Every structure is written in structure tokens, then in C-alpha cells.
Image (cartoon, rainbow, N blue to C red):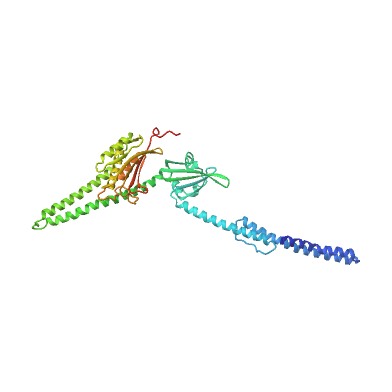
Length: 439
């Protein structure tokens, strides 16, 4: 029997002891009337005193237990009961429960703080609406997007905020929209939420235009660094040689070999000016690529034509199935010429280059395989003007990728698996009429 129940039972029996004792005494003793009433009075007083003592023993621990439970209900998890009393087991369980709730609340507060800091650091605007589409949560980016104070926004409906149309339609889409704080092109995403048995909606708005502008600015900075490096590489020797020739011309009398010095200096100036002209011409080709004019192109004919243009090495053309793509033949030919030019230069003076095409997953793949040393381990292979070859322009791969991407395709360059050499792959989407019929 638990300790509290045993003490309650024993206390109840003790309370009844005076009455029982008086009853037995009155039944067996031959007392006079005054003595009998005195005995009854003593029994009544003793019973009341013992009942009060028993009441305190039973009720006060229950008061303590009730106080602990009320503290838990009010969210105060710091109170603890003294263990070892009449309700020791119950106090132990309540103390353990209070410790667990206190630990869980601390974890919840830390998680909420981390979530708040994370939302505040996001550039994406985050809105949370309840089941009535009324705003319940937003982060600073969302506040800036709506250009209003937070307390004025809470409780407003999505329609009042001008966001109702964004909560409809596909879960993810790109659109041009005008917000009170900003306008431009945005990536809109929304999803259903559920909290406390009630529904809600999450809306996330990303400013795609700003990201693109930052990428564009970074691209311009990279381009200016490349241009500045190449121009300085040409202007520095030109300036130095021009100063040397000016100093030589100022000498009186002129040295006997002044003609050779002047001729060599002018040749150097002309060579560097020509190299700078070629570089700027290459940049102009890359920057002024016109939009493609697609039409039906048979790959077997185009690949054979490109292979015949290369005279430094015999190109092996591996025959594939007839494939027709929608592409600008001139631009596609130029892209393949650039890839083939790189493959041949990597292979010379010995080795081979193989050209083939095939169909794969609704795409037409044109592969160029060479026996050269393989591409260098770099992430900049397709960066304009990046080159590892002496005298290279660094636009061949960049131009090939630009042409392929303008046709909704792409270009990859990687080392051959398990063999020496590189594998360049240019792929283009096949028209639906060309794709194989499903079985």
C-alpha cells in the first residue's frame, strides 16, 4: 500500500479511537451520570483534536501538490516539491515533469530565436497567413517589400496587402509584379501550412531581378579585369619601347645601328598592337553573337562538312543514325569548328580525333573525342578569355557554349573515363517529331 494511503488509513483509525474507547467504557463501567457526561466530553474533544490533526496531514500535502500543478499550468516550471514526504512518489513525478517541460521550453525558445534570426537574415520575403488569409508572420525583407511598419501589417488580409493573387495558381512561378516597396521580376512560391489543427499558407517572394543585376555586375567586373589585364599586357611594352625609341632618337649623333634598333622596336610595337587588335576582335565576336535562325539541319551532313574543314589531322567520323535538329547551321558549324580546333591542337603531333553523334533522352548529342593530354583541372574552362594555351584567345569554348545555350542546349568538356584524352559533348534538344515513339 502506498505511503500516503497507509498514513491516511491509520490516521482515520486514530481519529475514531476516542469514540470507541468512550463507547466501551460506557458499556462496561457503572459510572454515575456526571462522570459519564465527562467521559463523553473528553472523547468528543479528543476526537475533534485528532480530526484536525488528520485533516492537516491529508489536506496540506494536497495543497502543495495542487500548487505545483497550478504552477505547471501557468507555465512556471521553476518550482519544485520536497521529496520524501507523504506524497513522495507524486512529487517526484511532478518534479521530473517540470524539469522536462522547462527543458522543452528552453529548446523551443532557442529554436524560435534561431528561426527569427534566420528569417531576419534572409533576402527572401516570407509571409505566413492563417486559414482566413490574414497575415500572422513576416520577416524584415517582407516588411521592406510592403514598405510599411510591422504593427500596421499584422492582421490584414492577403487581399488588403495586394498578395491574394500570389497565393493562387502554381506553387512556383516567375512573374513581373509591383510591390509598394519594389517592382521587378520575382520568383513566387507558396505552400499550405497546418498549425494547431488549423490551416494556413506560406508565401515566399524572391527578387530575381536583383540577383540577376548582382550577377551582371559581377560579370562586368570579371570582364573588366580580363580586359584591363590584356590591354595592359599590350600597352606596357608598347609604352616602354616608345620611350626607348624616343630616347634613342634624341641622341646626337645617332648610333651606327640605330636603323636596326628602330626597326626592331617598331616591329615589337606592331606585333603587340596586332595582338591587341585580335583580342578586341575576338571580344567583339563573342559580344555581338546574333540570335540563331533555326531551320532543319541534318547532323550527318553538317558533321562531315566540319570534319573536312580540318586539314592538320585526319578526323574519324563515326556514322550514326539519321538525326535532324532545329538549329542555325552557321552558328552550329562555328561551335563545332571551335571544339574540333581545340581537340586537334591538343592531339598534335600524334594521336587521333573522333567525331560522332547519337540520340539520348530526347536530345541530339555530338561528341568529339581526342587522344590528347586531357583538359586541365579548372572550373574556368568556359570563362571568356581564359586559356591555358600560349597565344590562345580564350573564346573558343565560351563561344561554343554561348551558341549551344542559345539553342536551348549545352556544352561539356571532361577527361575521358579511364583513358587519356578529352571528351567534348555538344547537345541540342530534338523536336517532338524526331523523338522516338513510346512503346
